Image (cartoon, rainbow, N blue to C red; front, side, top):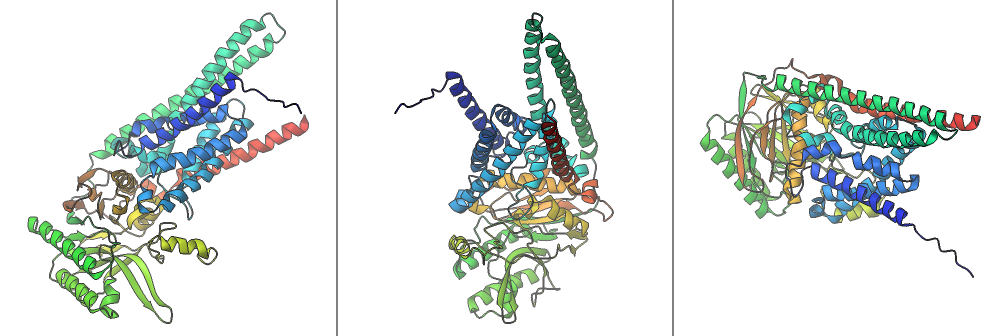
Length: 563
């Protein structure tokens, strides 16, 4: 039987190698533009080119190739970016990589389809699709803000002030556009060069008129590219001018003093000895901070800093050692002049159904709600998928049990965006990765909050990059809503952020520390445009790209039928 062996041409091999190079380049750009193991603050300037190799890769690939490359890109880029998930549990990293394996395969297929159904200016549609994708990937159970392009600019304070008008997804337009502009410019220049050659050769052929017509269309398309580039340049300059104008403004003439404690301990260590040692360390660090300043109004402890439920063990507990530990803590608070904001694994006793556990922030003030403990309580609403929440535990009991065996902590979901009012400061307490979501923090501000006091624990990551990625997103919550933030974390980054997103004081990571900072009291009447309108920029991008894709697809089908 004769075999028909088709040889691969050298040009085909070179093309495959170049596509693989573009794939790896795009993944590395994404990784390095964000905080990473080499550059803890990230190389934000690279983000303006993040999508450039992706667009060329899609242009040069067949449809099925684009899908495959997209899947590999998703798994590789998020594997590099979120490598620290492996320290929590390898399954966490695998889930994220698989998730973005699918998500980016879909993204690349849509971008390739946009390239197929458009003629000269498909790059504009691809630009809108990318902006829409970055908004959509933050939604739903699996939604995460980690990896949104605009967050790479967290140190570029003048530029990010524009987020007070349109949020992080408005800034996305500015940061993503240079990639598609350069892609269009390079592509159009190459096309024009090719057509010029064809025109010269066409003088001796019958297709000269057709080629000249194509060249004229190419010139028009190139002009559109330059017009869009000029518009972007004007918006970029205006954003900087706006940033310069607002950065120097004083948001308030009233302040409170806050001590944020960083105990450098994992609250997941079990046993009364560990619990006692940790509480005593928190008390010691608090006393050290108060010895330096007698004007401290608020003391903030990290997420689940006190592991045993304070209220449950006081009211219902049968373990005497836990009761004594809780009593020691409450006595310390009641003898103190500050308001305490404490992360706690809060439990509630329910009739006939046992106990319900929440990841909560408890707010105490001496002489008012300490003995018996009746603190203000906020329970985390936006739970981390797979590690704090899994809504399909009855549908997939085997997988749910696997998750439980991985030493995770499942919680019940809170239902009220609580606003506390103590000593003139109206504040909310987004817990851990809740301050990475613009929607969560915006709801808190709409409810009356004028400051975010975030309680976090990223100690499990054993990674400065992870903690800086989290901080980068927290910076935007202050800018978007024009309010300050205080972050008390188990290991970093414990800091105070002013309403313009500037980190005015921070503790070093992975050590026992505390910071004392002055936090402005923002008046009730002050609301940014973003607080009022929300993520319109992301919604518009997602809706507009879907609409254009549908209309353009219908037009292509009609054209095919007529032919």
